[in-house]
Image (cartoon, rainbow, N blue to C red; front, top):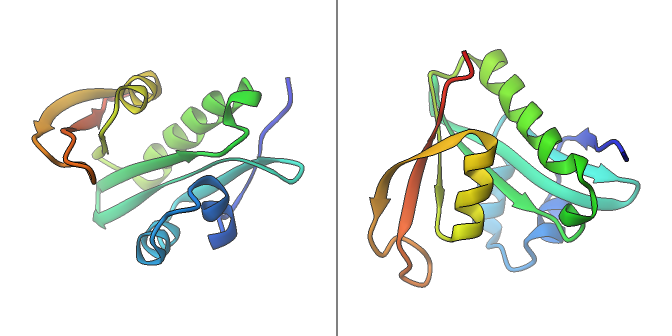
Length: 137
């Protein structure tokens, strides 16, 4: 298996995964700590992080890159980074919001469970789902 290397994300990393992302949104995501770019060589595999609106609470985000499906280790690396961040940063609650079934299933695999629905939340009016990270303890 090819190991995924990790570094602090840049605007270029984020644009490689989400070319149409708005600059303001991109800068907000990049200001989050912790945040990671997973890569192999010059291939961006994912960009992810946790935004902390206040102490103890985090809003997780992840954007798969164009090579995410090429590396079986990518999801495991992301799950490990998320777990380490939750422990190291002392989060009591980490949540995420999804607007499609693929994201819902992947975030469930990461350890999130559905908490509530948000009618017409998404950018095209699709419903959203708030998912909360289950405890690993």
